[in-house]
Amino acid sequence: MAGILTHNFGLKLLAVVVSCGLWFVVNSITDPVEKKPFSNIPVEIINEEMVTSEGKVYEILEGTNYVNVVVTGKRSVLANIARDDLRAVADMSKLTFMNTVGIEVSSARNNSELDFKTNIDNVKLLIENRKSIQKSILASVSGEPADGYVVDRALASPNVVRFSGPESLIMQIDHVEAVANIEGGSSDISTSVDLKIYDADGKEIKSNSIKMNISTVNVAVSILATKEVPLEFTIQGEPADGYIVSREVVSVPETVMIAGRSSVLDGVSRISVADPALSAEELTESTTTIVNIKKYLPSNVQFADSSYNGNVSVTIGIEKLVTKELEIPARNFAAGNKPEGFRLTLKELEDKDSYVIRISGTQAAVDVVNAEEIIGVIDMSLIWNNLGLQQWAAGSYQGDITFNLPDNVTLAEAYKMTVELGEIEEGTE
Image 1 (cartoon, rainbow, N blue to C red):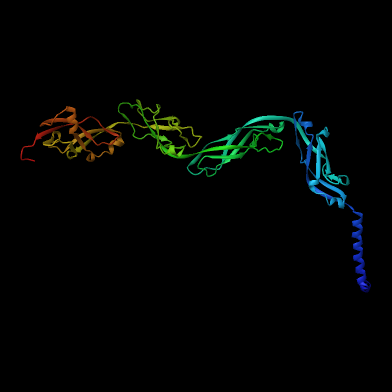
Image 2: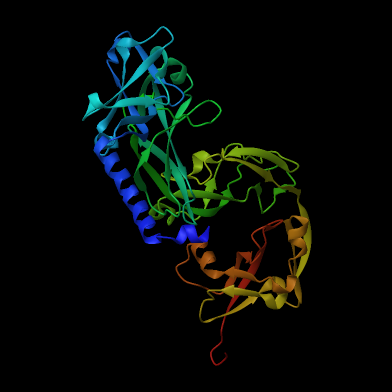
């Protein structure tokens, strides 16, 4: 066998090559019929007014608006056919009772020499009544502003959008949102935002069958600075005899976070509240009341938390008054604005080491008062003014004693002291 195969090998090889060449020549001369595939050719809808003129709209179902086409023709013809040469058409005037329209494919060149085969024969349609509605646009934000800032409000312009389309789709629309991204913002933001449509379950609705008169709006976002400030309350009225309002008023919360322009917040150090509900009139025990502080906010200032209603729980502390005797050292008394040229003596302190007074206040307040730290002063200028004197003369005068008591402690009664002025004899100090 090896001898047979290798005998005249060159001639045999030449015969094979010549045979292949002849086969290609014959094929070129005869121009055989071949097939050429094309994918995703869009289907063009014509004469759609046959449906729309009756107040109806249609929706193409199951992706039948695209077809795959296999073109059959001679090789020489197919060589010149490109995807852009193909046209798939569905004529609405040929709509069937099953709401289907046949697809016809043609070529822009050599059409009569070609045959077309599609993967689907018809466009499937859902035809229903046209519905139009109008919805307000809900402007909102995504992201967080910079630290120390809060979003005041977001407004869309325009704030209304009109829809039209298949009734079944239009009736699913619950609301329309325009969401602006404000991440890290510390000043007002104005930006263009695409509209998104949602159903009642918050699921986004996407359909080319729904037509909108606008698809984007401008959203203006106001961003304000924030500041934490304390609350200050004014208690009106007097409690019952023998009782006193505690120095501190307890509130929950004690501070509030407010928002506004930085230039406005710079001038706000506290929120002062003087509400008629904060009355201690004839009270004999502590009482708690709810006060709404919103109306006490300064102009152009608001709560940083828009959900906060402004209610504050305020407790007015009422305590029973107690009295306590203090033995003030005599050395702690003095006369102020002493007239020159006179010897001054405090008569009630002659030959005494101390002077007893009674103070009044809450138990906690009077307990911390230290007699050694209390100073009594008789102001001679007040005696001068009260008596309408033109000049001082030797004699006895009486004046009120003032003491440096804490604010939450008072004198149980007024105290006076006799001041004796004596002329200084010549030659004595």
